[in-house]
Image 1 (tube, rainbow, N blue to C red):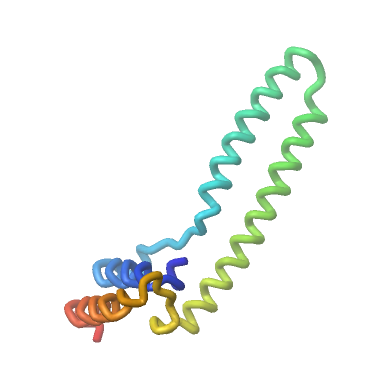
Image 2 (spheres, helix red, strand yellow):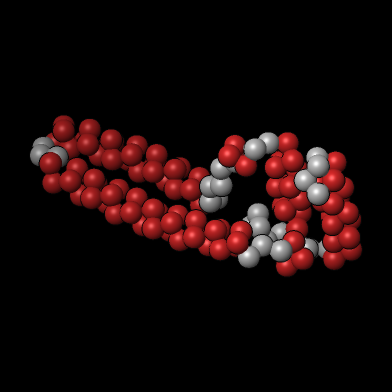
Length: 124
């Protein structure tokens, strides 16, 4: 999203005019959902473990839980790698003129502000 929409490109330009690029970390939005789901899953597995400890053998069930977590984590890691490759490709082919703009009348204003910002920080 940050390399596709014109207003978010402006936000990035502003951030980079004030900070080193090394201080920027790009994280896909779906990672937050994964983290929340992971904590819910861990809570549920801990509850299940407590119930099984009270009622009987928990080894098989906890093995299934661990295998499920590992499988989901590998899927997320694959997706993250694919997104990183896509981000790198977008960066290498980036042109501000290719960015989408919800309201075309804003395009001139955003171009002007990006140029003004870059001139003020000595980037151009």
